Length: 463
Ligand code: 4AD
Ligand code: MG
Image 1 (cartoon, protein in one colour):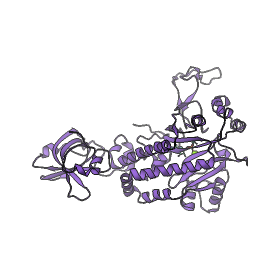
Image 2 (cartoon, helix red, strand yellow):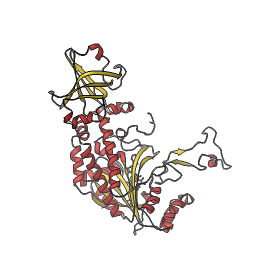
Image 3 (cartoon, rainbow, N blue to C red):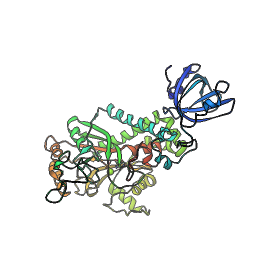
Image 4 (cartoon, helix red, strand yellow):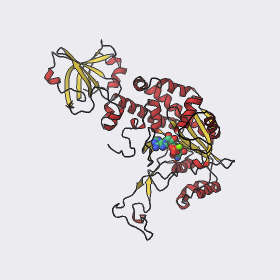
């Protein structure tokens, strides 16, 4: 007999009255000596299927190993249910136990566990309702992203994870080497000699695929990347991971205004797609963690993002009279508290800030005529702060070279990037969306460690 996926049971009423077979993990077993009930989940949906056991056909001895976590195959007739909260149930005829889960040892018991506890059991937490829901929503969002760009003719470009250049210039990179750490070859100057290293020079895990993305965009027109990125910043916050996934579109012949339109359309599309295709999981998460979740998602979908300059934003913050932990003045890098004040207190809408001081942004951003600001854009979201960072790129070779010199970026390593400006340069723009920050927003979770299956953060690379 072919196995039926539990999700399909609920969307195929014609299965009622038929013999079916399901496989999954026991959530609970309860009942008495006449009748017992197993709630079975196979990960395909937040809903469990109820298995009803007529105890004239089964013995207590036989069901004893069916405890929370035990894996089963169940065969029986699907019937309409009398019980409230479910449409149908299985009248079990035959049960096979694949694997037991000793109640004294299995870490996930029926009682709810805290998210902190579950982080320590990240190898098993996908079996909980919360993480099942979050991981399904995450998967839906990943699909929406590919769908959005595919429908618009963007080429999916795979950029390297091992790189010799630091795109963001923040220096927070994880080194990649095969040198023997206990016996490093040294040059005459006493520094490590990388000529014998695997790539013959120092390399690291990428912080962004943008630079190679620009190579793609200036050939293919419009590209996007979607892959893991790595940052060795020692940021222990609910919004930072050391390994996170980023989506980076890069588009030729697009200016900063078109870039903002693209970013706004893109996030709205993803949120709309998730609301439509992961509704049940989102509603369940809302019920459990965040009653305003669905209305907040709908609000973002139905409202234009506010667009203003950094200078205007700073003025609002300075005049707000609000006491911030970090001082605010023109030139200051905005902290999450500043971003959230603008979004949550002042405008009560997502905000796109542009025209940042060049000193606090990366070398590649297009310089404005004022000589002080660049065509950067950050998209700021309620509860999250910065969800997207991007810009129009400096396409003028001389200006770009001058900025690289000012910042002391080793020029010889950048020759290939500068070739895009040397040969057939074009105006172009792009941005990066932090995938986990989007998943945070859509699921209503509050800690980024809870929206990626196996989080990497400072001091933590378990599982
Ligand atoms: O603002 P960032 O650093 O921009 C870039 O990397 C550009 N190269 C993007 C581009 O223009 N193509 O990072 C982009 C986004 C941020 O807005 C944030 O959402 C996310 O990536 N992000 C992180 N997410 C989780 N953990 C971290 N440590 C993150 N750092 C950035
Ligand atoms: Mg940024």
